[in-house]
Image 1 (tube, chains in turn cyan, orange):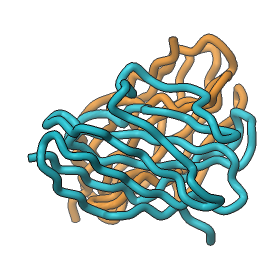
Image 2 (cartoon, helix red, strand yellow):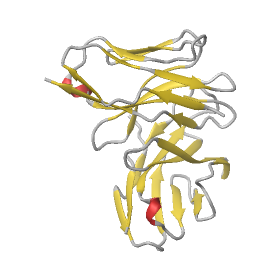
Image 3 (cartoon, chains in turn yellow, cyan):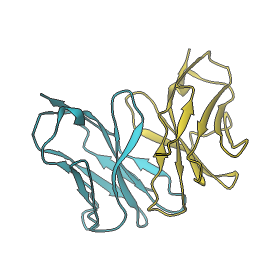
Length: 115
Length: 112
């Protein structure tokens, strides 16, 4: 069964450093998302991406964040200058179609630890 | 805006007990409703979904019915197992972007 994959599974970085989290969505999916989950808290939406552009972003997704689909398979989240409060589990998700009935499939997540 | 309110727990049960987790929502349109499950150390997996009023989603013995009149989507299982120990998230998806809005999650622990 096709699945969303994410690398690395765990990333440790120093405050102020740039990190890139990578995701490979399911191959025929067209809509891509990033969410994050701070330890013990709810899953929060960051950004959605369709047709090579951001379709929606939350207030969390400020100028320090960016997303890119550099080729036909990868979908990346970059944090330019990490802060302590960026420590969280980051989930990538993808969806095949454009309707509310379509399911988002999640990757296993990348745990980001900012020291 | 859209929001999901979920019974927070934690919930501790004995094996074969009945489980119910309450979920209510607020949405401006006609959302689809989901239950996701997160097993220890793992990511989010879709458990079940319902896309319109009165639909019942079911999977692995779990059920939830989309109730528009009470804006609810309560999760139930008649006889839980130790392997059902996990965090359960209620979520909704609505136009225009169909992003998921999650509840706070309910930690369920089933004891043998």
